[in-house]
Length: 612
Image (cartoon, rainbow, N blue to C red; front, side, top):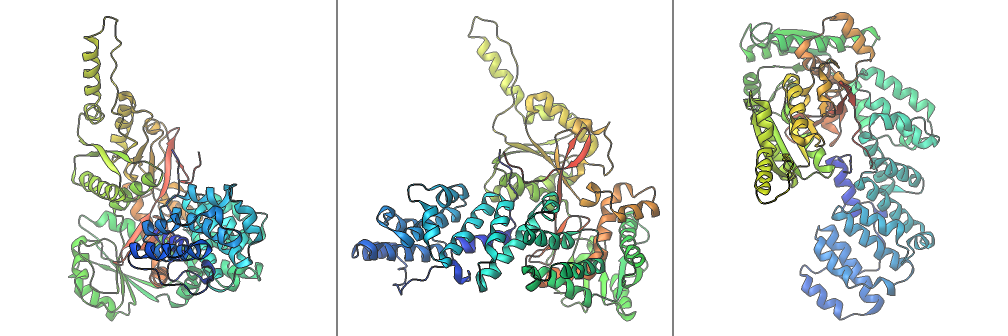
């Protein structure tokens, strides 16, 4: 199986924009041709007109129309046009244009391997020699196309190196496009790869990596990030990213100037949500005091008990007290009530999600929605080449929700769920039935009736599974994974939500979970930062099952100064204690969690970029 990093939607759209030369692609991404007839809407008309031409004139018109059809996402029609071109009869730049169009066609179909074969190994047409003999503008388009193909293939590091190498030769829109893609790739690289790049012998690449490092630090206070940015500017005065900073970095500089001065936090101090609220409150205070101890500017905090009065009474009181940013509430019903308000006077960040779309542009919703984890697992498994999934979940309301979230995303991608089962108290029997082991054993017994030799009867699991999506607590997971191993599925990959990990390493108890891959918040996977040390000193006993909510409090505090960044830069993301945070179209914060797996009973980070 090939493991690939799933390129973000924004990055992929930009890649395909360059690959198919849609309107808006940089001028350098298109060849300059003499005026040609517009591509007919009907391909039969196009073919008829092509038949009226011959030789070089026919080839040039067919390629121009193929380019137009690609720009309009009419991939099949573009292929019809290219089929009318005999590349062997072309020479020089025209042949190179034909080869690049063929590569663009393959990339539009997500066939990066085929595109790279044309761009790098097509000895029949001597692609390399054609590129060397081409004009600089054509060479630059080739380089960008090659880098796009590498990224879509999943080799982000090679694509990044190719883009940095080509950057100095680009101008204007092509240069801006390339630098946007460099930054997008840096945002996608695993942290270990980014750290290694910061020590690279290629100075320009190292400078890019250092800039991405300071932006991606999930525990850094915004003032610390800005001061590190000033230091980076002094160290890299002539760096391309210093001359034209990425939009996210510029927004970070603006965010520190426009951050709120007074925060109002609406949380319950009693009732069923009191424990969760206390963990969120402690996380916010951890971020606050960390910034204060470093001498950074901090907002004024005021807490309001949502159990003491009606929600809108408290909200208005916070406004009267001077709040210019409100965090909370935590209760889902109260969040829904706020979502129904047409206009809110100040930016409000709720700590839960409403089932309804918020009416006010000032309302943003943040929470630890486990459905995000299920969807992320579906996307990652599909990007790695899996197509047949098994779903194993507890017969609870939460288990059903996560099974539905995974299944909906998986099927929308094109995957198939071949087996699913809700487990109960008889875990071994439930696993056996999901894997259809009994049916296999029955077939073996039927065979034994018709042969004279002694048959060794051994069940087999069903073979129409690429992996299993698992929802389980640590207690259930420690029973489920051994049951899967026992019933002939030891080699079957298992991907689990964060529920599989308690939050504290327990190697003796979690030894049975070895090999299980799961997603979780960076706060629980990296426990050696200065903020972790400060939190351990302040709360020696930790927060138990609320530890992830403590991380959510840290992110809520950080978001008050950075929410404008996510709002102003479409497609931007913010590394956080709970995951990489981004905004969807409904102003909901969506988390992309980190990957880990159990080895020797301990959770270890697992980069998602792995090559066979």
